[in-house]
Image 1: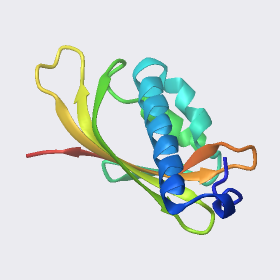
Image 2 (image 1 turned 90 degrees about the vertical axis):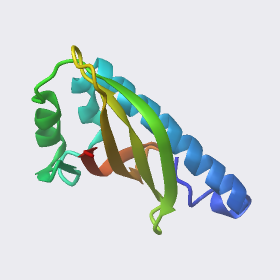
Image 3 (image 1 turned 180 degrees about the vertical axis):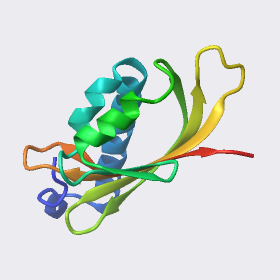
Length: 140
């Protein structure tokens, strides 16, 4: 859903609510897919323009991003989300989403803290795709 066409009829508070609802729904969907069917994440990225920065490694395009995510050295994991922060972004009505949480790997006693940022761009079909994705483990 594009936010621009609705802007005339919405208050700032309603726009913020809509942005937060989209961000929350995206985060729930993304991490559910990551934890249960990682190969399905490819559909969230643009084949040509999407970019992932994973622990400093830069990857471009849905196919390359999918290869990276599916080649991680663990098949299963569980994300526990602590915070979701979001903002509307630019004239194209994108949404910036910043996530922090913990990652549980099978057989590991300690949780790994992580932060991840997504830049969501609306599509003509009324959904969003991930233009930018930055992931970092938080040590210390």
